Amino acid sequence: MRIAIYGTGGVGGYFGARLAAAGEDVVFIARGDHLAAIRAGGLKLESVMGDVLIHRAQASDSPADIGPVDVILLCVKTWQVTDAANALRPMLGSDTFVVPLQNGVETPELLSNLLGAPRVIGGLCGILSFVAGPGHIRHVGGATFIKFGELDNHPSDRVERLRAAFVNAGVKVEVPADIHTALWEKFTFIVPVGGVGAMADVPIGATRSAPETRSLLERCIAEVVDVGRARGISLRPDLASRTMAAIDGILPDGTSSLQRDMSAGRRSELDSWVGAVVRLGKETGVPTPAHELIYTALLPRELRVRG
Image 1 (tube, one colour):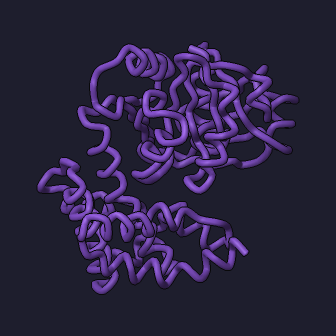
Image 2 (cartoon, rainbow, N blue to C red; image 1 turned 180 degrees about the vertical axis):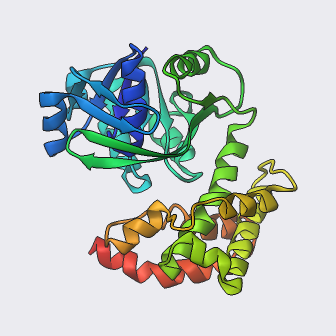
């Protein structure tokens, strides 16, 4: 398969490097100093699972120069998706499909509206990695996996071909029985951790150990589960308890990308995490008071960053 990585950050850089090292035809979309370094010295992946250097990595900042590919792994932030969807059009051939790997549950529908539903499958991943410097991705561990599947959950040759490519690359990969359930299960985990963490601005060890903020985490989890079920998502009865157990398993100094972005004064995914719970709750008539409080408290900081 010819695979384009649109957004060669911690996520795209890691999965793209693994695929390229396994012999897949991978091209990386990057820009600036990051692109220059990849072109000059290759893409370096420093990983707890084994380092990789893609010596002659194919890299460009121009989708038009790349041309049609078989699959695009879309690895940008949620607030960049619309611009990216328009920019990647020169890479769309007759059978090209896009796999969004954003944190959130709204991207597949957004991309379907922009590119056409047949071009989009659902996707999610788990990884702790980041750009350590130009041309250099650092993977520090955590649960490292990728999941994807057709939006109507039917088996397909294209999903199987992509799954086989990841298996060959040594990446833990799964095609869930229901991709929407998988997306909402991750959503149930990341949003409470991100929202409460960003508002408290302390690591997860502090928020889960204080009775007051632990209770807030539990209320946020319950709200996400209620909204998901109201939208017809099949979620297991024990999801709330399993999610809290997963939160208890995070290293005490752990933080979410939402919290890190807001603490650093960068634009964040507040709207597509906490804001999405509020929006989708209103659409389905499900009260989300905890998320409304968090969103209202954090929004002025987010708007200030956007100018």
